[in-house]
Image (tube, rainbow, N blue to C red; front, side, top):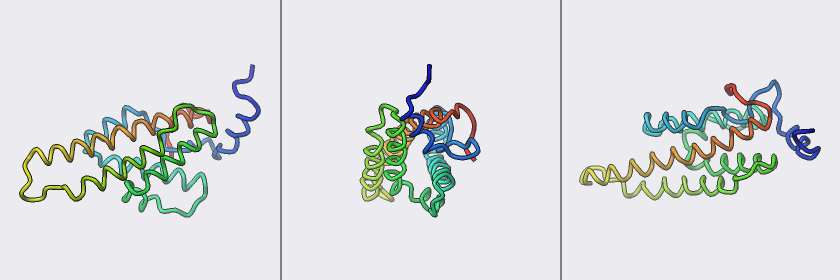
Length: 163
């Protein structure tokens, strides 16, 4: 009994990158969460860089993964939407929120910028800002990584690392 229908196999063949490379950065969601928390969300820059690098390699686009990683709150919507579109075309369920997560990341980033207490803010203000930003950036990346792993698994790449 075939695992996928002919239409699904055609969709998967369209997205299959050469040489068995994952379509997006392959890592365990728990690793994403722990590294984001331990590094106070600095890992999000690396995670976004690796995903944009995979997009650049697989789609042969002339984008700058480094630039998009540095300004990842601005480009998260684009990446999350791309992952959601790919997953939707592969008939993976539960991807409707990905575009919204990228938009929420952008809004939450700019929402906290003007409120950032530099010199005269109370310690509670610092905690509120950092907790909200770091926790949210960790949670949305974990959800996107779950979908990314499903996409890579659908391509037959259960384990392995992106280059």
